[in-house]
Image (cartoon, rainbow, N blue to C red):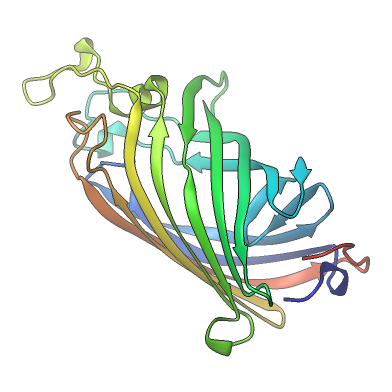
Length: 259
């Protein structure tokens, strides 16, 4: 991919795409959402946004980085979810926290990268008075392949991640208070701990002023501590999405430092 000094400090683009996934992990209802696709790359020394996500580079050396990890969940209307009818809606959440990234191996040409990442994120509801909904940890083994099969610009990434969360996080998604119990939905108190396993593969391609990306994800709840919740209707599922964007602006200033 070359050195960062060969590329603009930032690039910005706009496009569109679609994503399909379940209401929450374990739900049996899924939706397809069209969505805008903003393309933003920033190659700063302490903050970066690129194919690896948005992160603040708090500590960096050849083997270990301490970055910032960010994620989110979508809102769920209980009226449109058969398992949650009569229960409060799930507010969208935003998650952020530190990520310890250990670089296990690099090929000589940097086209193959194997990393061990440990993001730990605190989740908050997105509403007028945000509420904490606990911690989520997703250690994963991550493999990145650049210019796959000799095709310049085609990148592939994949990871496997066992998932863990505290009791508060699982309570938000899987507990059923006695006041919302029914003959078919008994009261249930979720516990913290293991939350299943996630496997993801993604590909992206930059061609001149256009960018294309797609992903597919498989999620298994086998062995999860909340598997007995009446709100869990599916023990595994697939999700995926794609997007395309056109680069419409870039800086004249060049990035400084390595890729």
